[in-house]
Image (cartoon, rainbow, N blue to C red; front, side, top):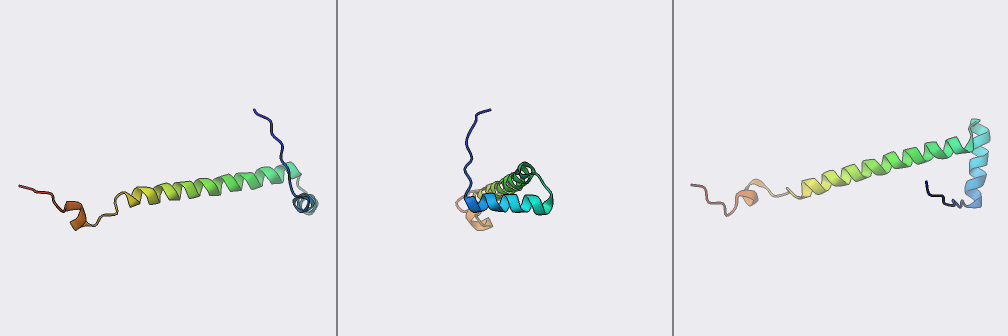
Length: 72
């Protein structure tokens, strides 16, 4: 695993500490939970975007789709 540095704004750190005390939760647990929700939301957005892109490739109506096709 690559290592990296996370820098948080002072007010974010204060909020983490305050919520940790209020909720009786470890800060690492709160960060993991928050990141998990973030990843789930972003994954859902990507799925929805993929569905929209797939739909946009077939956005022709019936007449446009069959226009110019000679059957017979």
